[in-house]
Length: 123
Image 1: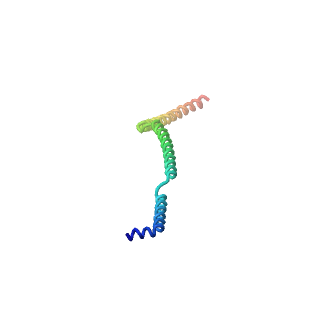
Image 2: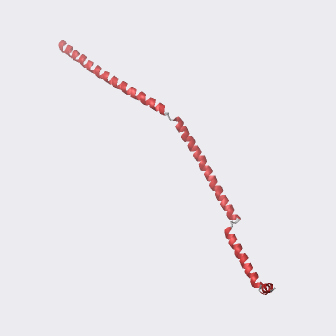
Image 3: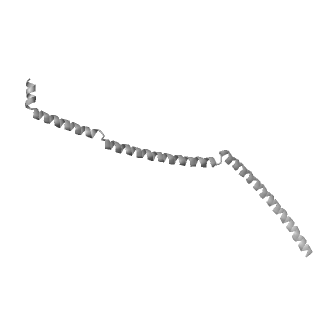
């Protein structure tokens, strides 16, 4: 009974302390928990980020398609190797032709010298 009488006698102080404790707890909880406005702002920010990521992904897809088309248009390694072989053959053929032209030049020199001799005899 003494406890109840003590509570009743000091009820104003106890009720004030309880009110202060409740208000303090509510203020503390308000700082810990996210308010509805903050949650909406966060959700909107995430949606904006998601939209920008989707746009970047679409742009990446387009770039990838362009690169794939360019790669498909490029010659294969075997084609390049075949071209190299053909160029080497042509190089060999050109050397052969050059040698033949040099031989023809020597023959023309001989014909020219004969022509010069005939011209000098006739004149």
